[in-house]
Image (tube, rainbow, N blue to C red; front, side, top):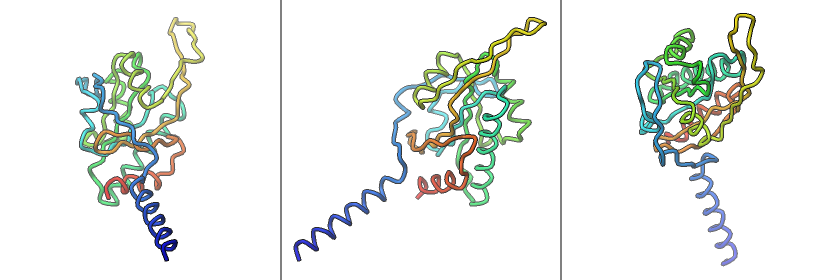
Length: 197
């Protein structure tokens, strides 16, 4: 009888722990502030701009020919799925890791072409050292590749980078990472619902 009781207690404890540990990460992003600029040219502070809200954050650059448009579109589709489920309080943030070219005006145009709703979306740029320091908090990397100067003297480059969307809870804690360009949108929506439970 004591053995059966011990087994039942063990099973109960395992179930309790697994219910509490719904998502794989629990990294505090609030320990340091990062001064950035949004698509309107306004100075903002990360993580202050996301505190109190579940946030879906992507890492992009606007000259990207493939992964970044796919990542942004997947975030857009996630927003649409959340609205269908009557979830209208999730924030969407895209941080550019190419601040040399991605000015606020460029980011705003990038967003407008994709019909991103600025009531829910914020696109961020800023000083390169600050942007890259924030990226390290997410373990996101980006390096310039294929640097060329064309016949008119214009310097161009592409970037190799981490393909990433991150889910942040309302307390500013990183809870899960996804491959941005091929994310399972249903999985992300379900993870957001878990955070809201």
